[in-house]
Length: 256
Image (cartoon, rainbow, N blue to C red; front, side, top):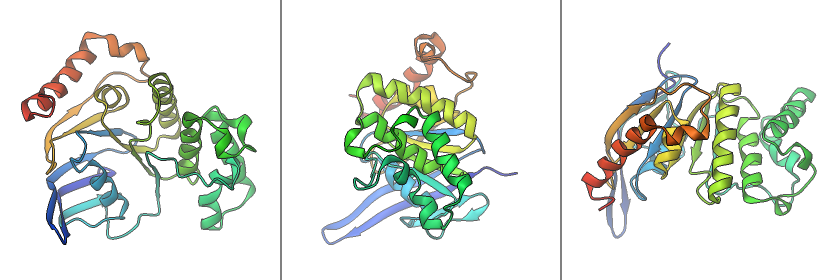
């Protein structure tokens, strides 16, 4: 079996009235089923553009994006997406927010309802199934958004900086929860992040991007056993990988 995601020479230029915007140089990388891959880079480097191309929301100017051996030519159904904003519907309670993909797919059966409740329990918000989004903290809202993304058992989950608006402790909690849940669900995951520590902690592979136009500076395999305690971030081997990424940014002038 080939990789679940295979990007080959994907590049993007936006045509605007005020001039062309070169967002991505040709980008090539892949990752295997069941893995977490993180794309880390500065703001505006094309990370979210890559995610939109993979989701079929945007089209590349050139190159190929392949998921499960199939060329991406439009929106991909077998996929869950979580954005920086949770995009929960304020007029629906937590349970009904999670059930939205099933409703749209015509799968409002007892098994799907049971899975929604189980995911909420796994994510630590099972007691809030009948609450409304405005009653939840930011971290709890993102847990609900992750449950919604996983409801129909997608083969691929895309996370676009889902924890960037959270405080440091809540972000750590979400990292631990995501690692545990991803291992349990065995869903292949691509995470967009600005955080070097988050990328190294969560990932099997890290793609390091330059400033715009984004290009791949390095692809680093992370071999630490899983599950990983948060304390691994204090280990010399972890610090060495984080420093390797930081030096790449320093050499690019991103952290000058």
